[in-house]
Length: 287
Image 1 (cartoon, rainbow, N blue to C red):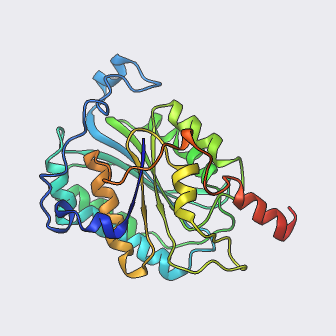
Image 2 (image 1 turned 45 degrees about the vertical axis):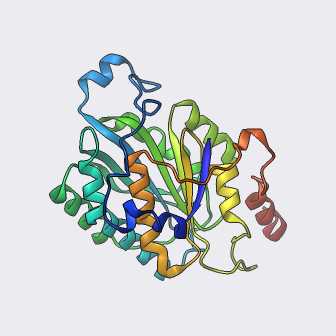
């Protein structure tokens, strides 16, 4: 089952706005997998345990302006050191997560900003946040969500920790327009037991000069995210950017899902074509 929630709905949750994480329960039995796909029981027993292995895949395509890129960076850094995040971390069975952060654009353009790091309290959270902020901001051409997913999948095998859940968190402000179709990449990740959540950024009006589309949130829901409890948090207000990132991370580390179910994508046709980005690019530039 996949879920959708607006940032406004997330921020109304008492557990998030009030700093009380009692309502952010530990992952349910369905999330606590004894052996993750692609690993053996021995692998999981020998590796240090964490509650979540979290890949933060962050869009830096040219459709993102410099202000958005700066706010995005600050949003992740501030979320990781926030009181709410640290309280949620303490409530988990192991009290620790493993995180890696990379930026992406075209199918061949991914750059790891933060290799796998353990976050188990304020000191390690501060170190990760500082590492995110010290890297110069960059922009690059094209948008390949499929490339980001394919790049993210093997990162889990390189992680020295083993979590109860494996999650790819993708932010972006446009549809896939480069590389393989996004649904194939999504399905490959799901086969490995990886969950994909989305942060569609919709703070600008769609224009011909960019690859923005109407209903990017529908596109993410139907074409990008997947796995048990996967969800989308949509940003439609620039002033809510940082709050949205914090809200999404809280939901992810706690294994929670928003309260608004949508029909599973497998049971219906996508509301937005999963090839809309490729079509727009072909219509405009013919390549």
